[in-house]
Length: 208
Length: 138
Image 1 (cartoon, rainbow over the protein chains, first blue to last red):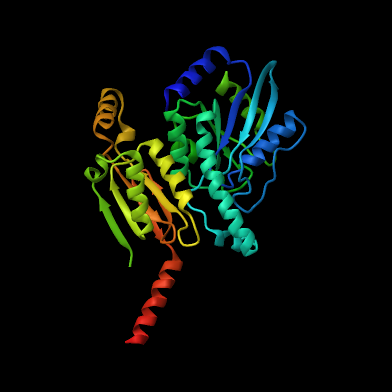
Image 2 (spheres, rainbow over the protein chains, first blue to last red):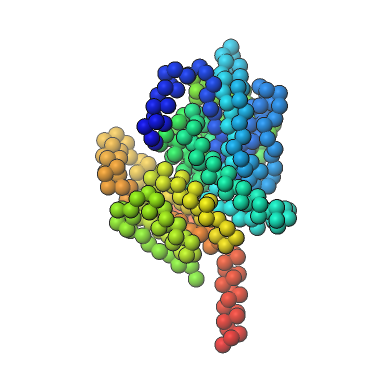
């Protein structure tokens, strides 16, 4: 972490605590980052943020919604929400063909997705706080999850883990908690809004 | 045939971050599974992912990556501090890192103390096809 980034974080801590902050959504592809972003935006702005899809890497560009004002139990929190493309170590256009895309479109999507991953990593330095969205039905010991969390820790960025998709039978929040005991973990279903009030409470604790 | 290349920490110790990433990525691009003694810095892991993304094309689909570090996570207090100082001075040699090309390694399943490499059926099928072709030639 550079001296400028450290200085920025110091200044953020002392002078900008109650102004708009950049709240990032990070995680592997198809964990539900954009679904959660949509839920937050619909709840507090009345409009969605981006498209969601079963085909991985639907979000291939950084998306920002500015000036979201969240009110909870008499407190107010203002932030800019940054939805990032899913971080992956491999991207195979043939997977998109299997998901039903024509070859040309699959290749284009793969190329855009690689750029999206690079952008997501570059944006790590810009974040003031991050929600790491994980699919609670999947193995949390995935190296991508560990690398994201490790990089956020190296930059001293506060982290909340949202163990998403708790509406599904295979969901296992305890496994996520056991994998990352040093972080607060909250189980949610962004799709159905399950436990979203507790999620907002945790968000306040994260940034205040 | 799957080729495994062991890289002792000494081989990357004197390299810059870019040099380390380049070396490991080049080995993976040669269809080798790399077993690195120790681990990269967190920032280097992220840079490795970025560099991998820049190189993805129709032939190279990316990598599978896993770091296993069974003992360090259990350290507390002075031992943890001592370990951090040693790592800062000499590099992190504890545990090991597995990097495999995605066209060969389909998935790396990892528990805190165990690693399972699942190789791609495509590669196995390709190998079988090549074997059949070679047998016919003979």
